[in-house]
Length: 195
Image (cartoon, rainbow, N blue to C red; front, side, top):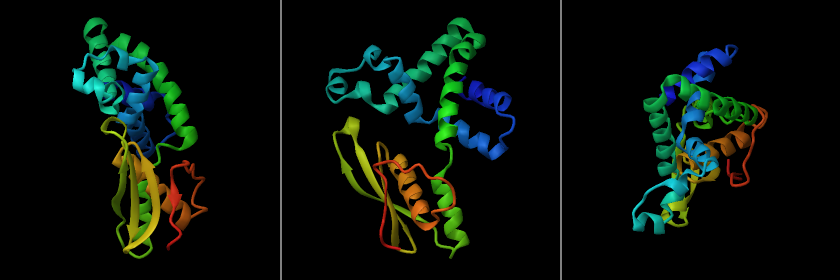
């Protein structure tokens, strides 16, 4: 239901975007971290029934559980009231979040962009390495470094390895191709001084 409503919403409300941009925007809207943030805005973590161990290790704040809870609410709404009710509830959220994502350019896949640049400028494929993990299981912070041709070009941090790799790719792009596009460099992202 989530994919259907999101795809239809983007197709009808963003006709100027080409296919690739629509695909990237859809992926940004339905990714785990995004849905977890929406779940937090409704305080769904408080309503989760979890075991004692999960509760004690912060399960109510875990992105994967919050994402699943948000999707479960959509499913229940669909079964109870139908597709129109899902659209009425979800489309305003999609409108708000897609505007934020487009403004911040969060739909741009830095890893794909870096790979295209690297292959066009020497053929080396970027390699991502996790160099640090900190924090408890429910609130891990990962640090990832991206190497091109064996040399470090960017480091980034995030709440998942995927988010940290995206931040590292963004840092590398900013360092290697500073005028390629405006880059929103998060504070946890740093470009490596080695080139």
